[in-house]
Image 1 (cartoon, helix red, strand yellow):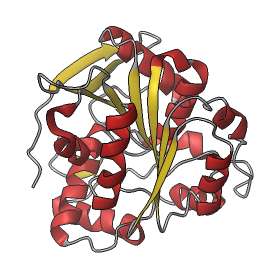
Image 2: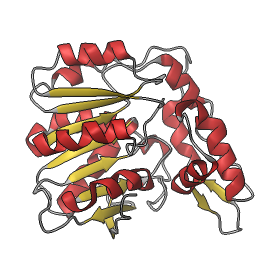
Image 3: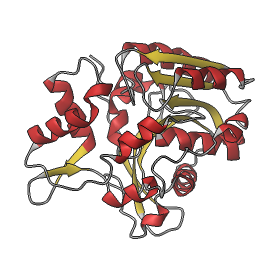
Length: 293
């Protein structure tokens, strides 16, 4: 079992200087890589999502893992219109600047992967490499529709057992072989206790505003031009073998259009999105970081 890694709590100001935002700073060991990892979570998740991967990577890397605005220990934004990727990206530059980090390797799950692509396309000089977790240059409508069915709920669950059951109900098709212990750990990373003693998902329900569409069958935006701007950056794409958001065909097209170093792996028994502590995930992540991180 991987050693549980300790982190330093960091509080910094958002790019618009309106919110206090939180990040975990895993310092790494004496022989850690000179290039830190910036790890960015998905739409309804938080920095806790990367705890299992941080434990596996141990002291090899300094790891910066933020809660995006509206999640977990970061302030909720009173203006829901500002829950969008370009604003989150601006917050990430503010975080890196606050910590004095000039260059980083990006690890992004789902929404965090979209942020990674934006960062690489707009400031390639500050990005060493990118790991995309179950997200790519084209997203499947099926997955977007599924996410819309659950994001934004704010009903209170009575205890952690109910929270684990709720997490299982939402995510069971993506996590083959999960035990009751796994679902409890999943809930602990995804939810938080309320002041009244119940449990809720650890995000502002208003983040769902960014998922609303006048036409629910609308085609997702074209991300290929942005992907093409990443041509010189080393990229690893991890795809849940059962993903409903990223297709195998899209990954192959991404590979064909990428002139720089490119690697990919399908993660057995996972949909959207892998936890990143799976043997398949680690077998791809660790050598990629050693080569490019």
